[in-house]
Image (cartoon, rainbow, N blue to C red):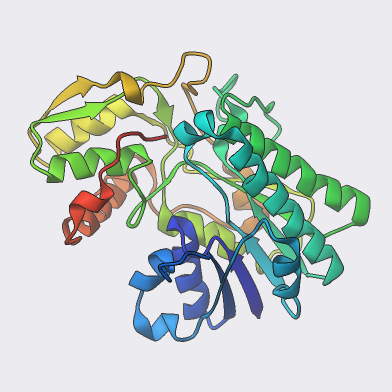
Length: 331
């Protein structure tokens, strides 16, 4: 199958590219053009896999670029996006340009090139703090950051293309994916990297929010499952564990289960404003199980600890750990 992956140079995108190639698909990978010639995480994956990938550098905001490179493609996985919540407070228009206009370009190209399936990547942040749990796909949408607003806009635009043009579009909505290659814009890598730098005092923000953390292998499997399902057009589907854990409890696991000794220092720079903080996310994954025949392998606290162990081991193997230290994160 001829498949295009946008955002292929990123955390989830690079894992998805790897798995698609392993399953025998012909993959074209969009990466964001830069003068250094860097292809992001694609530069770090197995050379035997990467030689099978057609890598195209460009800009998702360029409609002509997206359209020309979508010809003769059967399925598009659209993952290209600006995702750091803290940065969205400072540069909201950038998020509209990339996340909304970029998604429009993908949808329009899918329409013009008769793409069989277009899979749009959403985020659990669109729900805001849960009004009821577990969160079903019908839960109200509540943008508590410019990032979330841009993703809601992109999701609604995708659904409008399905309703207006009968475009075969599906929205996959992952809940807090974590694992190897994730940057320290996210909470789990920022905890790990500070500890591995032998810091006895680590800086964190609000410890009370809970999240439904999903290991990257499970998230990628959710995307892969869309290839065989014929019941997904016009659907929005959560990909989550149906398991929540607080940031404070993650630090306790790091101390008790992995034996790390550290003290937590509150860093005001890492605290989201009260009205912007999403305090609780817990997914219902019933729809994914029913429509996609998907279920997570890394389930409950046991599965979370196993995924955490794999993530720690990956970071331990990175030679330039300092490159992963960040002053802000999102969860």
